[in-house]
Length: 398
Length: 83
Image (cartoon, rainbow over the protein chains, first blue to last red):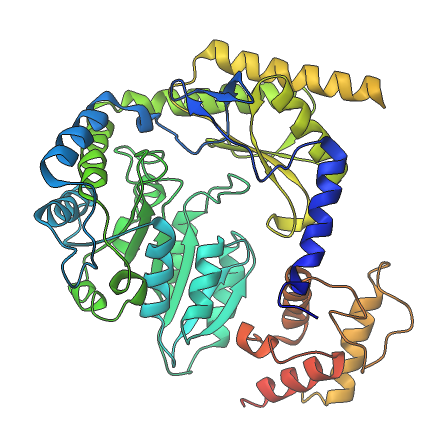
């Protein structure tokens, strides 16, 4: 018996996956990006349809310049926590800009989006409180529920009635009730029924936190996310999000009109006990935010591209989620089928994410694709053709 | 209506047997993960069905203590009594 025995199961499953298609699907290397939409993988130019880089801003010339200039003037890191030596004027500037963008009074910036969820949820919901989570919540939300001490109750995915029923069962119990939902669910691309969720919050007096990680920069007239799109921002107590998707950098945030957010800084361990974001990342993030605000057409193009890709895959007979969003998940029946198709797509020059149960809802493997504003209509057609070619060649082999 | 642990165990077993993949010989002392080959997600989803049937919410931290069908029944009965 060794300390590593617990990993033998996953070792065995990994060997099975490699035997099915030749590659380790968790060890894909993008040798380098050639643009926001094309990368070099296995020495080949490969179309990127699985990067979450929704607006293509990871390659923004404005953000690149801002990062270069800042790294030359400030160095490469802060070497400290936000509550010690890790807060520079840039961190406060970014917090102000994010708060202003959301029209909220307060903002905390975290070193990653994962830490923003981990920190906010575990800190807000204390020992005598209840945390109500959507069943399909992201791992960062489940991990937050384990780091904190609240009682955790799951409700059915995207089901406001089920949430209402579970809140009603808690009627009369002391303690705050914190409801956590996501704008766009990362695995399936499902969009939360935000207006209905906000109505449940109003009726029950619960506190509402919305993770806009995949909907920030994507939904809403100005890109503030699903709450803006549904016109219910005033019902949301806390908005959490990330810079590592639409803004193309790294880091997380929480915005709120509750002034007590500043007190959270002194209780929130994932905020306090880690190094703060490096200055060049802050500068690039602020520049990318400026790009996003200056180019609302990116959002229009993104949704047009999502509709083109979603429609194209459906025409091939593939099953996807019903809602058109920049996350397009192809649902497959079996793991061998998903692994074979994923490998064939990559060989033909298309990168998507392979997502396997239990990380996926309903035990179905998914080929999770994400569309970008910077994809051209020709690149989207090409990706759809690659899907068709891969399916045809796998059928012929069978 | 006040359910007893044996009542709730029977209800859970009947619900489980509706799934053709579950072994036919399960009893109250069957272990949910080992004997039924449920992963953590399957356990949480199954408990959700029982919650609806009995109009009770089982917090996830209570689930961590549960190994057998009888453990789950005991937990649900204590939650219904407000423990």
